[in-house]
Length: 317
Image (tube, rainbow, N blue to C red):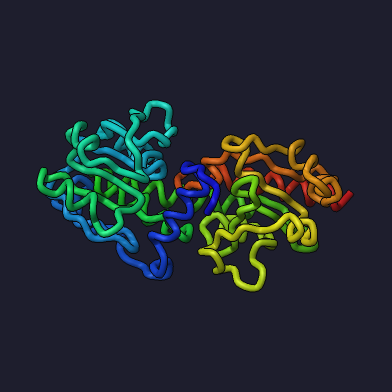
């Protein structure tokens, strides 16, 4: 992918590649005793190695923005001693210059972690480098489905001694999302949409985690084409393809990174003729919320719900 932005498009694509071939395989989030804080525990994310934690980790380094959000959401924030440079939520997370894309074992070990959480660890290079110090590496690949995301919530709860909180977070997120979808009016005819990852027209298909959220609302993805699995679910469209499809809704997930908004979209050659532009249905999303399989997926769903509700109200007038 030619666009250099590591906080969104690149990170998404790397996560998808790390997960390739594993999206349909279901594995338990982890096993432990009856007590939420019982150790040792063995945890394993889909498409990643199993990790045994002998004791509750008290010094966690997170090199994944999704993991950072989830750690705080399950109540493990006090155990987090450092996070990577793009982990910007919540505000109290101890952000450093560490990189999840190019992890530096020496810089990581300077924080004296007993657990490091990463999005990907090709050939176990980081795990092998940290193992002699007794530091465990937990890999959490990109979640390809909502259910996989929920399992990661449970897994991080188990791994950090907050099993009940992880299970509760998964349950609440699932229920909140279901309620948002149920409360959203259904259009008489299916609405089409275009989700923009960056201004070079990279998008997502229905096979991705993001696309699955849209699917819950019955929306039709113009990026699916003849093969929704093409390009790992992250194809680059052409302006001509988008203009020809004339989507009812446009969702911009490049407002922060690339300064895109309803006005810049309308200024693109020919885009002022699109239904979504003419009807004021260009939705400006927060880049991070619209790209992370974190508990904030509920906020993403609310934004989609509001857009669908507005569109339905407009077509019924």
